[in-house]
Length: 178
Picture 1 (cartoon, rainbow, N blue to C red):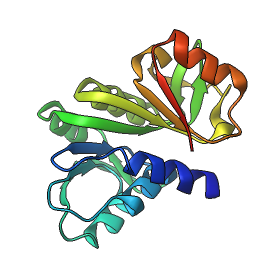
Picture 2 (tube, one colour):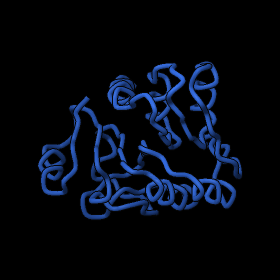
Picture 3 (cartoon, rainbow, N blue to C red):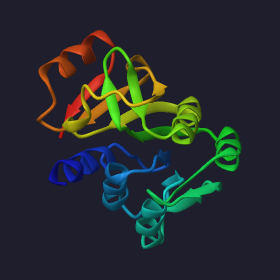
Picture 4 (cartoon, helix red, strand yellow):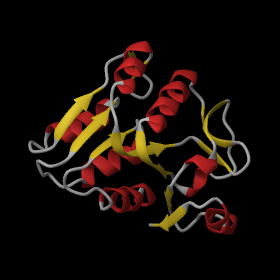
């Protein structure tokens, strides 16, 4: 959990006044929500109830919640309604949590509706920031979200394998170790 908190702090520090950001579902993005400054110039879009509950206490941040079908396992919304809602938006930055991160197979997840929604999230973001602790490297899940070459920034912890930092250079991806 300490790694996720450090990653969350580093990610939240990237958010500037006037920006709109998309927080994917997950425990790492929940840490980003906890560390966001409570200022009026930030808009956060999310499909995650945990993120929403944290942001509800930050009264100055403008919050947009995607509708959809509730997945009780992680208390997040998915499906056609969420996908339709995201297609009408454009955000400055997506913070994408991942279940699997493999240099060749890409960013993956276990849940197909999440992969579908995450792909659409990546399409409407000017910048895609993957946030993941080092336990996810080398892991391949059933459903591909995007290729590693489609992320702009990777924020991870010091336990990340050496090949991750080296791959960042070749993929034109900034790697931040939190």
